[in-house]
Figure 1 (spheres, rainbow, N blue to C red):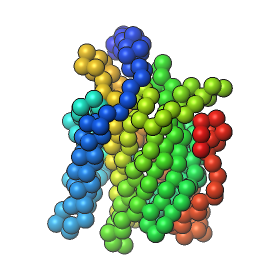
Figure 2 (tube, rainbow, N blue to C red; figure 1 turned 180 degrees about the vertical axis):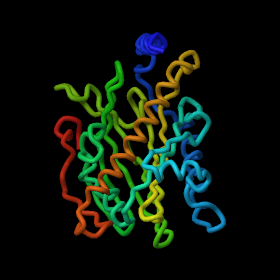
Figure 3 (cartoon, rainbow, N blue to C red; figure 1 turned 90 degrees about the vertical axis):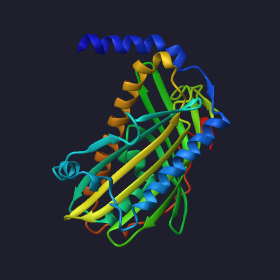
Length: 291
């Protein structure tokens, strides 16, 4: 097992020049992405019909029992977690967690506390802030980074999120990355913000769907994350895809655990949930990578 792991690492290092080469998002890739996301949203909307199960967990009593025991369950929503499109790769994963003794108000307060994302979801989220909010819509910005072997990827993204309340016990939130810019040489004196849709293509687009149900003395939270990245050469797919999938599983598992922890830390007399308060602060990287 150690030998296989070492061979995989050596293979990734050998493939580094190909994987980190500059790329540019193409119109055909964007079109395929938009079609995929539209189908995903239509699928979610059908779950609001009482004739269909609301949660993904409802399709598997075993998975529901797992999360009730405190486990985090993660699974691919397409194939083995990835789907190849023209000059791109779609990653689609879903995860679920149960938060005992929680209420939807508490969960949504954490989900809307964008200024605190940098503390809730550290170290991946390096900075975050609320940009604005109106009715059930919120706008926020984040800088995130991830170091994997030879790659130090950093992105600055702006997001638009909207809440949909189905009834008193059910609801969901959809968040779209409306713009993303790669930060070249992140953490160095010469770091700079690249133009949109240019760079190494680690992340071109992001779409997330959070569904929640208040039941059984707590809240069930499901998070589906759909991402678009550059494609992987066919000759390297056998080597790279398992590593990418492993990272996707770990990332989603960690995010759900951190969300549960944040909800559990809420004080009993916390402010009413859903209050969005922009503080007019620029991201900390703004002075060197743009505002």
